[in-house]
Image (cartoon, rainbow, N blue to C red; front, top):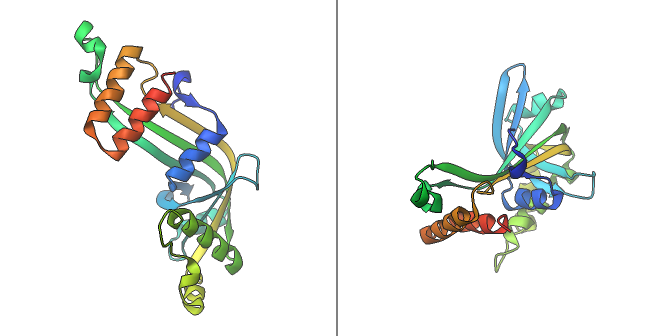
Length: 211
């Protein structure tokens, strides 16, 4: 990943926060059949390896797990907030006119060696953790135990677990850090005026990384 120094985000906690907030990662492998990419929801465990461990599951019918079983290295991409940035928001546009559009984004890329897990107990724990993360904010959260045990057992037979100890992790926060302060303020104010969840998140990042 192209990484200008001013866009690099090396804080592991910040990288982990993005993974948790945007847990649908793009799992990428390169095997005998060429490149394969599948979106997969991941659960992050931080106590199993120094940089964290990603846990997921895929359908047994999804042949990508066979490449992983053969020892193929994996790349997982987690896409955070992103949005188009119009140069009309820049103070520099009014001063010199020497501006162009761009795209702001926050992204984390993870590399490691994955292993395949078929143990039903591990799969049940992984599904429970992933479900809890996404249900716990609801007033009446659904839990895996709400489904009949025999139904859950049958579903577990149709999936394969994937566990990845993170070997390298790179974060890139391209959030207008290279622009003058007045331009950054204009970007944040312009994003606020759009009034969408994604633009509000980016406006917050622009302000946070302007300090």
